[in-house]
Length: 98
Image 1: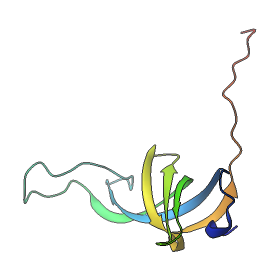
Image 2 (image 1 turned 45 degrees about the vertical axis):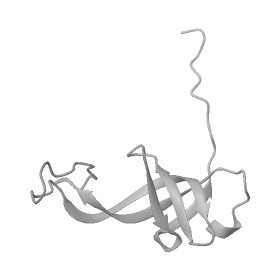
Image 3 (image 1 turned 180 degrees about the vertical axis):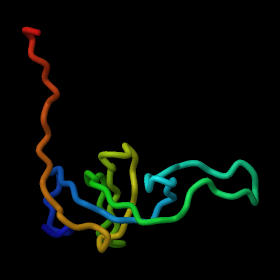
Image 4 (image 1 turned 90 degrees about the vertical axis):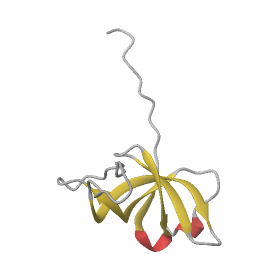
């Protein structure tokens, strides 16, 4: 499925790639330098994740995603996403007898 063809009101997700600050293990970090001119604790690198589509900007060809692993939003261009699939939401139901 192409991003522009997703019906409004439906939940879809995709794989995506972007450049982020990464720690030594290759995981994204949000840390900021403590002082102006100090060294950032991370290194720029490529991050690949899975995101649920939150907002599509058809005019600018951008998509805002909720990263399912990092639990944060990221905005990327349409050419940085692939494997666009519908989301099947499941309730986290506990067995009432336990």
